[in-house]
Image (tube, rainbow, N blue to C red):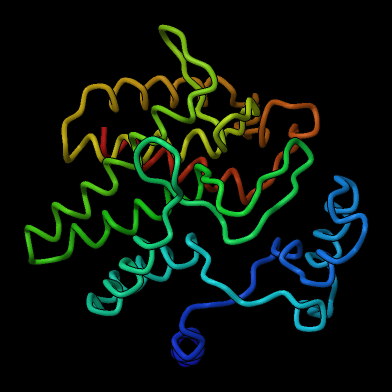
Length: 263
């Protein structure tokens, strides 16, 4: 408990701003290098910052910033502790960080990042950040005693489902569906798709939207069919995504349980 209190105090003192494991491309130093647009250099730079035992960010000019997923997790934690006023401040901050130019409401990261399959510029929305943000608003709506505030925050989560259903479907037939990670990319990543399905199921339980229920059901069916014989999931379906780890399997299981409870 003492460790949690110290961490809580530290995060509050930092105004919930900080660095991210993958924020190396925000480096002012890297932006001045002649190869900063090279795919391989971007990958190498990110891995350097990710794996270095020494924090290189202060000397490389990587500023601390607001991470939408981080703010959402902090807000959900504060709601769980009944600290509603503090959570509301973070949620209002989140409302100022949405991405423009896409259907519904969505969030991205506060840094560009380079994956093996694609490059994502700063601010481009993605499934994972949007789902965590939407869940934070739903967590608050479930605990607040103000029905108007609750409805407004459920509306935000509903608009996140609109983003997912309109911008992130990469495959759909009469029985199955797979949601993508970011708009315009065809990579099929199981934890991203299942997180989206879980959010649609959770909002459907409140708003009773049959479209959300059907799309989420098909996405869950698609994911369950992808289970390996030993009940593990590959991260995704591209050749370099065919690895298994506990971290993303945990996302899958939590999403599956959330969807089952809601649907």
